[in-house]
Amino acid sequence: MTHRRQLWPALVAVLLLLGCHDTAAAKKKKKKVPPSAPPAPKAEFRLSSPSFGNGGEFPSDNRGDEDNMNPALAWEGAPKNTQSFVLLVDSGADDGADAAKATHWVVYDIPKEVSELRDELSGSGASDGMTSFGSTYYQGPSADGSMCTFKLYALSTRLELPRGASREAVVAAMKGKILGRATLKAKV
Image (cartoon, rainbow, N blue to C red; front, side):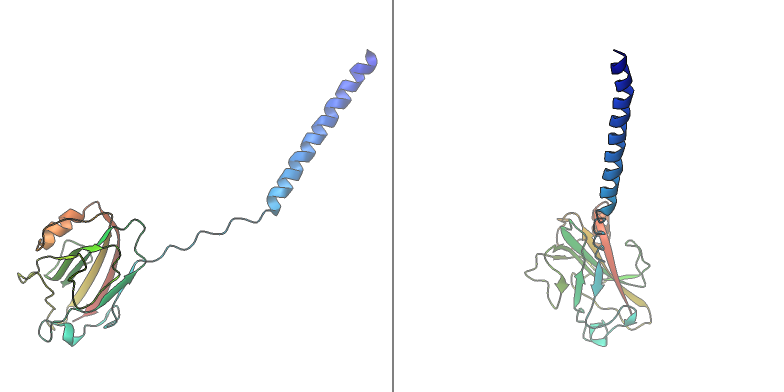
């Protein structure tokens, strides 16, 4: 019986040592495992034009006092879950969506599959809204030294507004649905 009493402490000590050894080995194994790859960089939502660079000179053939052709636009890096886009083109505007001296183009419900606007919107499923000039098509700015700002919004849904909606109605309908915004500016 005395012999058994003496074995218990020795047995407990051996078990504790084995447990510590396994824990130390497990920690070493964890250190040897390479860390997971860093997350992929988030794509930047960008708007561009082949006609002018950001902050550059606005082309004369896109001005209202010249040929009045809308500039070609392209974008990339739209946020995940984008369902549609809205384009607002203003001159003399600040960076907010709700302030502008003149609105030159309003396009909404641009399908999520579209990544550029060229000469015409027909067939794209997008709708033109009302400009400051009472038209539902592009009205280029006049050469007055102001900045013309193109703002493209990625939305979580389509707006489903009737064709010819006002800028104010489009901006109000976008509230709470904006996933991202890309901006492009040019001096007129």
